[in-house]
Length: 416
Ligand SMILES: Cc1ncc(COP(=O)(O)O)c(C=O)c1O
Image (cartoon, protein in one colour):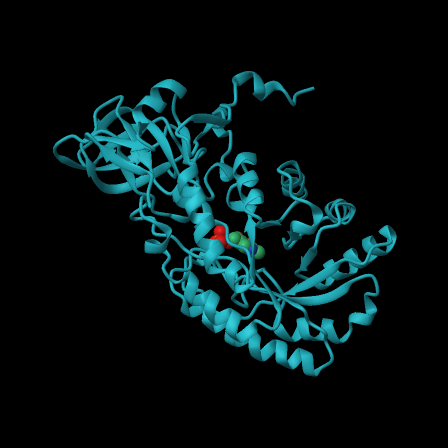
C-alpha cells in the first residue's frame, strides 16, 4: 500500500497534489500520510505482537506528538533516550509503564525524572550508570527493572555510522562485563536485574544479523540462567531497514522479513517476554520533504539545482552520505544529471550528487522520499533557517498542520 502516487502527471498524497500543499503551506515542508503510518503499524502488529513480541517505538526516529499519539493508540510502548523524549512521550499519553529508557549517557537528572515517572525499565549501558542509577533509585525509594545492554560484536552489515553492535562501538558492554554485573547484582540492591538488551545497528536489510543475534542470545541467556540469574525479559532492539531507492512502496515489499524474524525469535526465545524497538521502519516511508527549485546554475562540470530545502531540514545526506530519492512532482519530458543542493553555506549541504532526475524548471517542486524517519528530528536552525512545518494528510483525506513553521520571532524567544 502506498499513498504517494502520480495522478495525471502530478505527484499526490491521498489524491491531493503535493504542489497544492507546497503553494498553500510554503516550502520546505514535511508531508505525512496517516494511511501509510496506519499500514506500517498494522504490519508490525501482526508480525510481532501476535507472536507475543511487544513493540516499543523508538521515538528518536520521529517525535512529533501527532505521530506519537498514533503509536500510543496502537498500543505500542515507547523507547526513549533522553529527558526531553520522556517529556514528549508523556505529553502524547504514554504512561510510565509503557516507557523503556535507553541511551548511553543518561544524566542523574534524567534518571530522577524517569524514576518519578515510574518507567517500565532502564536499559543500562555501563558500570558508571549502574552506580548512578542505584544511588538515584535508593534515594527515590524505588527499585526499577533494568536490562543490561550487551554489545554482542555482531556485524549488522550496514553503514559504519549506524553500526552499534561491534566491540569498537561506544554502545553497550562486552558480554563478559554484562555477565559479571549479573553475578554481582547484590551490589546494586535498588536495581532489579531482569533482562538483556541488544541493538546491533540501523538500516539492516537482511534477516541474518537478527537471526545471529537470536542464536547468540539463546546461548548467552542460557549461561546466565545457569549462573543463577533470573531473567524474564529480552529486548532485541530495532534496526529494520527500508528501501530508500523506492520510497513509495509498501513496508512488506521493502522489509519483507519482519515475520520471519518474529517467528524465529519467538520460537527460540519465547520463554522470555520479548521486545523490539523499531523506529525507521515504522515512519520512514510515511513522509516526503517537499522543496521548491529556486534556480539552476551551470559550470563546465556540473548543473546545480538549488532548492529551498537544505541540510538543516534533512541532514542524512550530509551526515552519512545517505541516499534519498528525489522525485519532481510534475512529470516533464527529458532527464538531467545534476547536483541537488540547498542554500546553506556548506559544501556538505546537498541532497544528491550527479543524480539523473526528470527535468525540472525554476519554481517546480521536488519531493525527497523516505523523510519520515531521522528527518525533522535532526533538523537545525543553522544559517537562521526556521524549522519547516509538518503536515499530516489524515485517513479521511483532510489536511492537518501537526507542527507550524518556526517564525523569525521564535529565534528571539529564548534570548534574555
Ligand atoms: C537502542 C536503540 N533502539 C532502537 C533504535 C531504532 O533503530 P531503527 O530506527 O533503525 O529501528 C536505535 C537507533 O539508533 C537505538 O539506538
